[in-house]
Length: 475
Image (cartoon, rainbow, N blue to C red):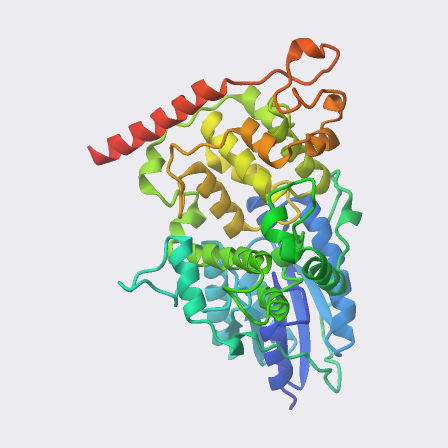
């Protein structure tokens, strides 16, 4: 009897550097792939409509790529993570699967789903093989000198580098199987209705497109990344995050290709390449946080005392923020970029998040949700980590009294107002003198709103709110 394997695809929609795929091909005579989709779970996790569109396009390409390896890809719909393990088991039993392979995901819901899936499959005498493809090191294995999980990025990165072995970067290509498996199930379509307004052509789907974008960035932009990464108008970043979020591109591949250009150095050589690799390590750091501190998967702040902060709530302010009409051009331009492109420049993500949580003093969880519902690169661990960092509720948190001034940020990183004018056309005729903080009486014909708050007053309000929460928890 042939050994039959099943690869359960999740956030690893690629052939390149896919350990679950490679192991299945190595161990099995016949292999099938399966992607199990739950609309309810997608919505519960605040995943965006544009990301779903991108997912579907990438699944179509993955299906064709797998067929060249004699591996069919089945799409199965399920109600939720709770129903998924049973559905996966039923499919496996019906098709006489001997072994199921998958790459691990992060988060409490995902871990519970996977553990239950493994238990049910094992009860059906189906072996399970699990791998880590989103991180270089097994989650939680890097520890402080006291044996505790890292909660600050810089020492985590230092230990990451100290333990780094070039063998980590060995990548094999999958080979085709001799014959294709025969299945008893038909693939079902993912239900999708477009409601987003993003130009999806900005994000070509598939591994080839991801590899081309990575190569283009590394060859043409990476060496200047240290200087250009903070300017939103220069487009000096890689824009590969949507491909990383769905696993169309692996972090290991990114690190390998970056190191090739830097004489295989991590801490010396070109500063731009080193800084860019740092960003990949940040992703691993936040995944380790999610693994070692499960509370951050449960809408809880990493810094416990900040759970006592008295956040404000103003529907009118929230509406203005969500529409990019706060009256602060750099904030509004960042939000409008996200609504237009499904993506926001990383410097602006920090500026926007800090304005929301500090100046507006609104709960970071609302901002985190807003980003997830609109980003094509929505990634739970990175998005949560970034919002909590900006809100000073998370790991590696800036002191709560460090609050970005959006006008200063605008002057520093969009000095000529080019980015602002690109996304806020109603300000296109405003002078350079006023572009960062428009004066209403100078262009009364514009419908751009007046600032929703006073920066100095709101800054003091935020500091007082954090100070009060800390004193309450220390009393």
